[in-house]
Image 1 (tube, rainbow, N blue to C red):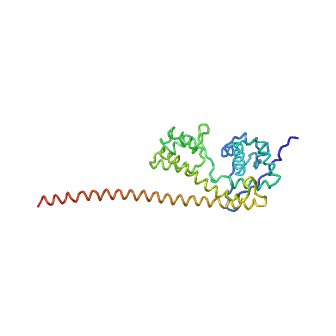
Image 2 (cartoon, helix red, strand yellow; image 1 turned 120 degrees about the vertical axis):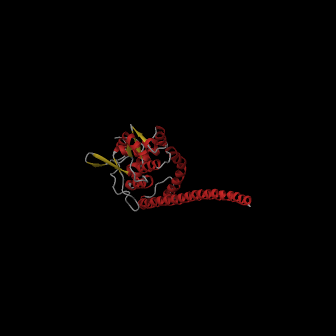
Image 3 (cartoon, rainbow, N blue to C red; image 1 turned 45 degrees about the vertical axis):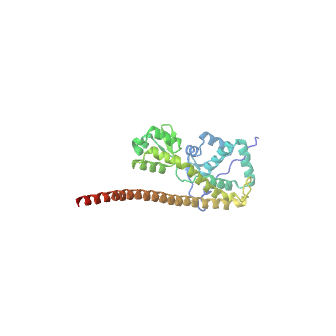
Length: 285
Protein backbone atom coordinates (compact mmCIF):
# COMPACT_ATOMS: atom_id res chain seq x y z
CA UNK A 1 0.00 0.00 0.00
CA UNK A 2 1.23 3.54 -0.68
CA UNK A 3 2.63 5.39 2.26
CA UNK A 4 -0.12 7.99 2.70
CA UNK A 5 -0.95 9.82 5.90
CA UNK A 6 -4.06 8.87 7.82
CA UNK A 7 -7.11 11.05 7.25
CA UNK A 8 -7.27 14.16 9.37
CA UNK A 9 -9.69 13.55 12.27
CA UNK A 10 -13.02 15.40 12.16
CA UNK A 11 -12.73 18.87 13.52
CA UNK A 12 -14.42 19.96 16.71
CA UNK A 13 -16.79 22.86 16.13
CA UNK A 14 -15.57 24.63 19.30
CA UNK A 15 -11.90 24.83 18.36
CA UNK A 16 -11.82 28.58 18.38
CA UNK A 17 -14.73 29.45 20.60
CA UNK A 18 -12.45 29.49 23.62
CA UNK A 19 -11.81 32.57 25.71
CA UNK A 20 -11.76 35.70 23.57
CA UNK A 21 -12.73 33.91 20.34
CA UNK A 22 -15.71 34.73 18.15
CA UNK A 23 -18.17 32.17 16.75
CA UNK A 24 -16.82 30.45 13.68
CA UNK A 25 -17.55 31.47 10.11
CA UNK A 26 -19.04 28.84 7.84
CA UNK A 27 -18.36 28.42 4.11
CA UNK A 28 -19.52 26.42 1.15
CA UNK A 29 -16.72 24.88 -0.88
CA UNK A 30 -16.89 27.76 -3.41
CA UNK A 31 -16.71 30.37 -0.63
CA UNK A 32 -13.86 28.49 1.04
CA UNK A 33 -11.86 28.46 -2.20
CA UNK A 34 -12.44 32.19 -2.68
CA UNK A 35 -11.45 33.35 0.82
CA UNK A 36 -8.44 31.01 0.84
CA UNK A 37 -7.18 32.15 -2.57
CA UNK A 38 -7.30 28.67 -4.06
CA UNK A 39 -9.63 26.60 -6.23
CA UNK A 40 -12.39 24.10 -5.52
CA UNK A 41 -10.29 21.52 -7.36
CA UNK A 42 -7.40 22.10 -4.95
CA UNK A 43 -9.71 21.82 -1.95
CA UNK A 44 -10.90 18.42 -3.18
CA UNK A 45 -7.35 17.30 -3.91
CA UNK A 46 -6.07 18.31 -0.48
CA UNK A 47 -8.95 16.43 1.15
CA UNK A 48 -8.13 13.31 -0.88
CA UNK A 49 -4.49 13.52 0.29
CA UNK A 50 -5.50 13.94 3.93
CA UNK A 51 -4.12 17.46 4.10
CA UNK A 52 -7.52 19.00 4.78
CA UNK A 53 -10.27 17.77 7.04
CA UNK A 54 -13.58 16.86 5.40
CA UNK A 55 -16.45 19.32 5.82
CA UNK A 56 -19.30 18.89 8.22
CA UNK A 57 -22.18 17.34 6.31
CA UNK A 58 -25.59 18.97 6.52
CA UNK A 59 -27.79 16.98 4.25
CA UNK A 60 -26.05 17.06 0.89
CA UNK A 61 -24.11 20.25 1.63
CA UNK A 62 -20.57 20.28 2.99
CA UNK A 63 -19.93 23.07 5.50
CA UNK A 64 -16.37 24.33 6.11
CA UNK A 65 -15.11 26.73 8.77
CA UNK A 66 -12.15 28.92 9.67
CA UNK A 67 -9.96 25.94 10.59
CA UNK A 68 -10.11 24.95 6.92
CA UNK A 69 -9.26 28.52 5.87
CA UNK A 70 -6.17 28.63 8.08
CA UNK A 71 -5.03 25.17 6.90
CA UNK A 72 -5.39 26.18 3.25
CA UNK A 73 -3.47 29.40 3.86
CA UNK A 74 -0.71 27.40 5.55
CA UNK A 75 -0.56 24.99 2.59
CA UNK A 76 -0.42 27.91 0.15
CA UNK A 77 2.37 29.52 2.16
CA UNK A 78 4.42 26.33 2.26
CA UNK A 79 3.91 25.75 -1.45
CA UNK A 80 5.16 29.27 -2.27
CA UNK A 81 8.27 28.55 -0.18
CA UNK A 82 9.07 25.59 -2.40
CA UNK A 83 7.65 22.68 -0.37
CA UNK A 84 5.85 19.96 -2.29
CA UNK A 85 2.56 18.38 -1.30
CA UNK A 86 4.55 15.29 -0.36
CA UNK A 87 6.68 17.40 2.01
CA UNK A 88 3.54 18.84 3.57
CA UNK A 89 2.07 15.37 3.94
CA UNK A 90 5.20 14.29 5.80
CA UNK A 91 4.89 17.33 8.05
CA UNK A 92 1.31 16.50 8.92
CA UNK A 93 2.31 12.89 9.63
CA UNK A 94 5.07 14.12 11.95
CA UNK A 95 2.65 16.45 13.70
CA UNK A 96 0.11 13.66 14.04
CA UNK A 97 2.71 11.40 15.61
CA UNK A 98 3.83 13.92 18.23
CA UNK A 99 0.90 16.21 18.82
CA UNK A 100 -2.84 16.30 19.23
CA UNK A 101 -3.71 17.37 15.69
CA UNK A 102 -6.87 19.09 16.84
CA UNK A 103 -4.81 21.31 19.13
CA UNK A 104 -2.39 22.11 16.32
CA UNK A 105 -5.31 23.04 14.07
CA UNK A 106 -6.53 25.28 16.86
CA UNK A 107 -3.10 26.93 16.99
CA UNK A 108 -3.14 27.42 13.20
CA UNK A 109 -6.55 29.06 13.41
CA UNK A 110 -5.63 31.28 16.36
CA UNK A 111 -2.62 32.65 14.46
CA UNK A 112 -3.71 32.53 10.84
CA UNK A 113 -7.50 32.63 11.01
CA UNK A 114 -9.51 35.62 9.74
CA UNK A 115 -9.44 38.74 11.91
CA UNK A 116 -12.70 40.03 10.46
CA UNK A 117 -16.05 38.31 10.78
CA UNK A 118 -17.22 39.75 7.45
CA UNK A 119 -18.07 37.38 4.65
CA UNK A 120 -17.29 38.06 0.96
CA UNK A 121 -20.32 39.51 -0.83
CA UNK A 122 -21.10 39.52 -4.53
CA UNK A 123 -22.36 42.64 -6.31
CA UNK A 124 -23.68 43.03 -9.83
CA UNK A 125 -22.56 45.99 -11.90
CA UNK A 126 -26.06 47.41 -11.52
CA UNK A 127 -25.81 47.23 -7.72
CA UNK A 128 -22.46 49.05 -7.77
CA UNK A 129 -23.95 51.73 -10.04
CA UNK A 130 -26.84 52.12 -7.61
CA UNK A 131 -24.37 52.49 -4.73
CA UNK A 132 -21.85 54.82 -6.39
CA UNK A 133 -23.86 56.37 -9.21
CA UNK A 134 -21.93 57.65 -12.20
CA UNK A 135 -18.74 57.66 -10.08
CA UNK A 136 -18.46 53.89 -10.60
CA UNK A 137 -16.60 54.45 -13.84
CA UNK A 138 -14.64 51.65 -15.56
CA UNK A 139 -11.37 53.27 -14.47
CA UNK A 140 -12.52 53.50 -10.83
CA UNK A 141 -13.67 49.87 -10.84
CA UNK A 142 -10.37 48.84 -12.40
CA UNK A 143 -8.45 50.70 -9.70
CA UNK A 144 -10.58 49.07 -6.97
CA UNK A 145 -9.78 45.66 -8.49
CA UNK A 146 -6.06 46.49 -8.62
CA UNK A 147 -6.18 47.41 -4.93
CA UNK A 148 -7.96 44.15 -4.08
CA UNK A 149 -11.06 45.99 -2.82
CA UNK A 150 -13.08 44.22 -5.49
CA UNK A 151 -12.53 40.95 -7.31
CA UNK A 152 -14.01 40.18 -10.70
CA UNK A 153 -16.34 37.18 -10.83
CA UNK A 154 -17.63 36.90 -14.36
CA UNK A 155 -19.86 39.92 -14.93
CA UNK A 156 -20.10 40.54 -11.18
CA UNK A 157 -17.70 41.71 -8.49
CA UNK A 158 -16.90 40.29 -5.04
CA UNK A 159 -16.01 42.49 -2.08
CA UNK A 160 -14.26 41.12 0.98
CA UNK A 161 -15.82 43.87 3.10
CA UNK A 162 -19.33 45.01 2.36
CA UNK A 163 -19.06 47.50 5.22
CA UNK A 164 -16.01 49.18 3.67
CA UNK A 165 -17.70 49.27 0.26
CA UNK A 166 -20.83 50.86 1.76
CA UNK A 167 -18.67 53.41 3.61
CA UNK A 168 -16.90 54.30 0.35
CA UNK A 169 -20.24 54.69 -1.43
CA UNK A 170 -21.52 57.03 1.30
CA UNK A 171 -18.34 59.13 1.15
CA UNK A 172 -18.64 59.32 -2.64
CA UNK A 173 -22.25 60.50 -2.34
CA UNK A 174 -21.08 63.18 0.08
CA UNK A 175 -18.93 64.61 -2.67
CA UNK A 176 -15.55 62.97 -2.12
CA UNK A 177 -14.13 62.03 -5.54
CA UNK A 178 -13.87 58.27 -5.82
CA UNK A 179 -10.45 58.52 -7.47
CA UNK A 180 -9.17 60.54 -4.50
CA UNK A 181 -10.66 58.03 -2.06
CA UNK A 182 -8.94 55.13 -3.82
CA UNK A 183 -5.67 57.09 -3.91
CA UNK A 184 -5.97 57.58 -0.14
CA UNK A 185 -6.40 53.83 0.35
CA UNK A 186 -3.33 53.19 -1.80
CA UNK A 187 -1.27 55.74 0.17
CA UNK A 188 -2.45 54.49 3.56
CA UNK A 189 -2.06 50.77 2.85
CA UNK A 190 1.69 50.49 3.51
CA UNK A 191 1.15 52.15 6.89
CA UNK A 192 -1.67 49.74 7.72
CA UNK A 193 0.58 46.85 6.67
CA UNK A 194 3.25 48.09 9.07
CA UNK A 195 0.72 48.38 11.91
CA UNK A 196 -0.64 44.91 11.12
CA UNK A 197 2.84 43.38 11.19
CA UNK A 198 3.54 44.99 14.56
CA UNK A 199 0.29 43.62 16.00
CA UNK A 200 0.76 40.14 14.53
CA UNK A 201 4.24 40.15 16.06
CA UNK A 202 2.61 40.83 19.43
CA UNK A 203 0.30 37.86 18.97
CA UNK A 204 2.82 35.33 17.66
CA UNK A 205 5.45 36.46 20.16
CA UNK A 206 3.70 33.98 22.43
CA UNK A 207 5.69 31.39 20.47
CA UNK A 208 9.08 32.99 21.15
CA UNK A 209 9.57 30.91 24.27
CA UNK A 210 9.90 27.84 22.04
CA UNK A 211 12.56 26.88 19.50
CA UNK A 212 11.97 28.53 16.14
CA UNK A 213 12.19 25.22 14.29
CA UNK A 214 10.00 23.23 16.67
CA UNK A 215 6.34 23.11 17.59
CA UNK A 216 5.33 23.82 21.19
CA UNK A 217 4.99 20.77 23.44
CA UNK A 218 1.52 19.22 23.11
CA UNK A 219 0.68 20.00 26.74
CA UNK A 220 1.31 23.73 26.15
CA UNK A 221 -0.79 24.12 23.01
CA UNK A 222 -4.32 24.52 24.50
CA UNK A 223 -3.23 27.30 26.89
CA UNK A 224 -1.24 28.94 24.08
CA UNK A 225 -4.28 28.91 21.80
CA UNK A 226 -6.40 30.53 24.51
CA UNK A 227 -3.74 33.19 25.13
CA UNK A 228 -3.54 34.10 21.44
CA UNK A 229 -7.32 34.34 21.14
CA UNK A 230 -7.37 36.67 24.15
CA UNK A 231 -4.66 38.91 22.65
CA UNK A 232 -6.25 39.21 19.19
CA UNK A 233 -9.30 41.32 20.15
CA UNK A 234 -7.14 43.46 22.44
CA UNK A 235 -4.91 44.24 19.47
CA UNK A 236 -7.97 45.40 17.53
CA UNK A 237 -8.99 47.65 20.45
CA UNK A 238 -5.51 49.18 20.38
CA UNK A 239 -5.80 49.85 16.63
CA UNK A 240 -9.20 51.52 17.01
CA UNK A 241 -8.05 53.63 19.95
CA UNK A 242 -4.91 54.80 18.16
CA UNK A 243 -6.82 55.47 14.94
CA UNK A 244 -9.39 57.57 16.83
CA UNK A 245 -6.58 59.52 18.51
CA UNK A 246 -4.81 60.13 15.19
CA UNK A 247 -8.04 61.22 13.48
CA UNK A 248 -8.88 63.63 16.30
CA UNK A 249 -5.37 65.07 16.19
CA UNK A 250 -5.32 65.41 12.41
CA UNK A 251 -8.80 66.93 12.20
CA UNK A 252 -8.06 69.24 15.14
CA UNK A 253 -4.85 70.44 13.51
CA UNK A 254 -6.64 71.02 10.22
CA UNK A 255 -9.54 72.86 11.84
CA UNK A 256 -7.16 74.96 13.90
CA UNK A 257 -5.10 75.88 10.83
CA UNK A 258 -8.25 76.68 8.85
CA UNK A 259 -9.68 78.90 11.59
CA UNK A 260 -6.31 80.60 12.05
CA UNK A 261 -6.14 81.34 8.31
CA UNK A 262 -9.63 82.82 8.38
CA UNK A 263 -8.77 84.93 11.42
CA UNK A 264 -5.55 86.18 9.84
CA UNK A 265 -7.42 87.11 6.70
CA UNK A 266 -10.08 89.00 8.60
CA UNK A 267 -7.60 90.70 10.93
CA UNK A 268 -5.47 91.59 7.93
CA UNK A 269 -8.43 93.29 6.25
CA UNK A 270 -9.17 95.23 9.44
CA UNK A 271 -5.53 96.27 9.74
CA UNK A 272 -5.56 97.53 6.17
CA UNK A 273 -8.87 99.32 6.53
CA UNK A 274 -7.97 101.33 9.65
CA UNK A 275 -5.25 103.49 8.01
CA UNK A 276 -7.61 104.22 5.10
CA UNK A 277 -10.30 105.38 7.53
CA UNK A 278 -7.75 107.52 9.34
CA UNK A 279 -6.68 109.20 6.07
CA UNK A 280 -10.31 109.99 5.26
CA UNK A 281 -10.73 111.62 8.68
CA UNK A 282 -7.64 113.77 8.13
CA UNK A 283 -8.91 114.79 4.70
CA UNK A 284 -12.20 115.96 6.20
CA UNK A 285 -10.32 118.13 8.68
